[in-house]
Amino acid sequence: MRVNMGKIKVIIKRPDEKIGHITWVSPTLENLQKHVDGYIEAVRFGDMIILCDEEGRLKNKPYNCQIGRTSFVGTIVAVGSDGEEFADVPMDITGWKFLLK
Image 1 (cartoon, helix red, strand yellow):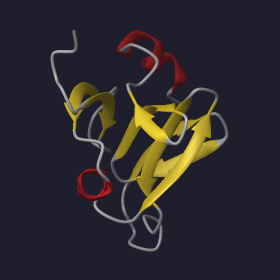
Image 2 (cartoon, helix red, strand yellow; image 1 turned 45 degrees about the vertical axis):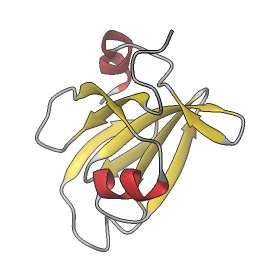
Image 3 (cartoon, helix red, strand yellow; image 1 turned 180 degrees about the horizontal axis):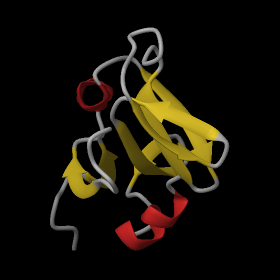
């Protein structure tokens, strides 16, 4: 049985964090926009989705990290997907830290 009903497990990484942290959040659009401090842009990496502020560069948000060939600014939220819905992030923090550059 799920402990955090209505919430999903995510990894949040702020620009001032080396790796980030795992937490549980409500997957509503409004709540996720609060976490990235702006309109959501979703960037897919396999079975994981990185949510970021789509206007982060225009707002001069600080550099956060690079995943693959994509660099991110501002706070990012890593989630999984279940069809059209956001779901628990499909990796643990150990796997996550190896993605970051």
